[in-house]
Image 1 (tube, rainbow, N blue to C red):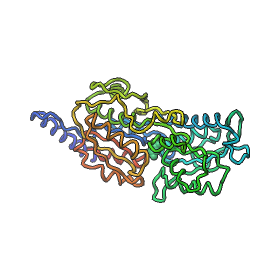
Image 2: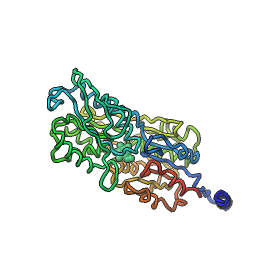
Image 3: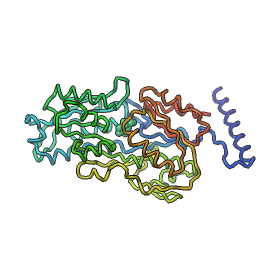
Image 4: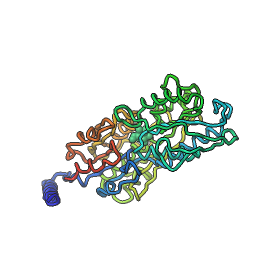
Length: 401
Ligand code: BGC
């Protein structure tokens, strides 16, 4: 019965479209289920296993994911920490002189594959990986500290869920850090966080042990400044400008009628018809329909290259026809999305002549986004950042007809 109703509706939409064209209108009515859908930052995947949901990704031939190389990023973060230790003085880093490097870890969102990849990358680099990304599951590792091999111990790790249920919660990190500093004292030789928001949250703890190295991820503007000021030791750039532009560019390409490889190369790895091209390296993984920016480590040696305000000069004003895009953000309070991703979207969208409507959720309930994922017929395309990584169908169901 459902299929029959869908068929009738599709015929009705098709007839409307043909009629509209016949009447001399330029724009045919496109059924919602044939419009471009780009998931970004939160990849449709199983929150437990991290396995990518290809049913969602194959919703239509205009469905893509834009993010960054999560596994590669975990490795970059691990290497940043290993390089720091290799160049450190054991007598300074090992604060209590017990011959062991102890660290605490802020995980973020245990159901998010970015978070999982970082936990794995850090633990693998330090030898503490015990086959799981769960909090508390780590073995004793070892690292080269200034030429001496020393054991490394993960003293504690926490997901960092806020009292309201939000993930990647910076306030939870502040509370955890207060607790760690009191309970573990000078056993803590390093603080490692899977994002900058939580790293900066740790630094907010009134009893933060002065001078203890702290690592984040995202290269948010405040984190970059904190590296310059010597407060944060390192972070990783997931190249937000390349991601925000690629999210818009894939949509632009699909709306311009490009097909095949051109959807993921025009304006991304090659100049598009307007002469634009993202300057940073971006890869395409065909099996998962994923366009991925690359990561780079940031520390005291190169932080000035990542200071706020530097936008990609490869993207200039186009004369492309204006298109309307509805875009969701899972949590208006997310540090990375609000301080880095949305400003980048707002910068590049007008250049690509994309008229963005951004709706933001509360980070806990999918309905906080879904309830505003409405009036879909009046948009040309959709960009989706889900609250839960397995909620893709809740959005796609709204685009059935
Ligand atoms: C970022 C986190 C952010 C999360 C939101 C991650 O890629 O590194 O800072 O909270 O995306 O989905």
